[in-house]
Amino acid sequence: MGITSKTAEEIDDAREKEDLKILEAVFFVSGRFLNMQELISLSDLNPVLIRGLIDKLREKYSQRESAIEFIEKNEMWKMDVRQEYSGIINKLATGSAEFSKAEQETLAIIAFKQPIKQSVIVKIRGNKAYDHVKKFFDLDLIRKKKEGHTNILTLSEDFYDYFNVTDSENLFKNIEKSGDELQESLKDINPKI
Image 1 (cartoon, rainbow, N blue to C red):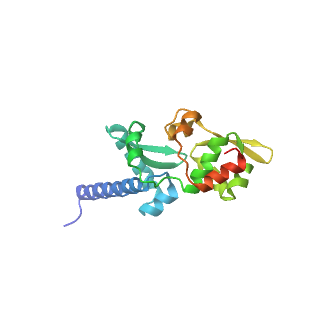
Image 2: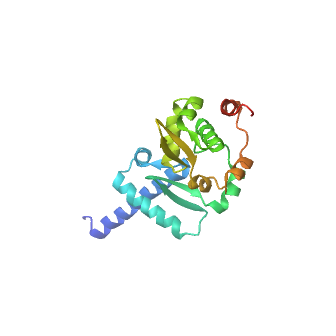
Image 3: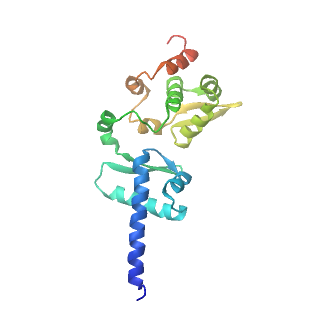
């Protein structure tokens, strides 16, 4: 008994459903933006298949009445809780975050002192700040404007949307002090702290 075209379609459909579940699980567990290389590595799926599955996930979460949304930025994707439910999630958050502690501290300094030269950030935070700035720029959280041999860094509108704040004043009302290292870094750029 051979495989009929109907049986082959059923096998293909079952495989696609399984691949979709794998990719959905990767996004769910990661909790952060993932690029194509990370998706390939984590799911063992090929990039053409992943792109098709991303379209299906985007469609799935845009049509459902769900607290989850599917977000794409600069060829990076993630699943996240819709903004209107972020207050509930913030109460439940366990401290693990999309950004490392070092990245959070770098971003806090940019937010606090904007506009600020990238060279000043690197002087305060060290060479890893170049990677941090690149990540923030790739996620559209900051803007860069060339000035001489460095860049002037400012927050973008997407930053305020991403962190669910309306402006810098509200941002700093919500920031909790995050340790001695950040406080020391801020003293370097503002001795009055």
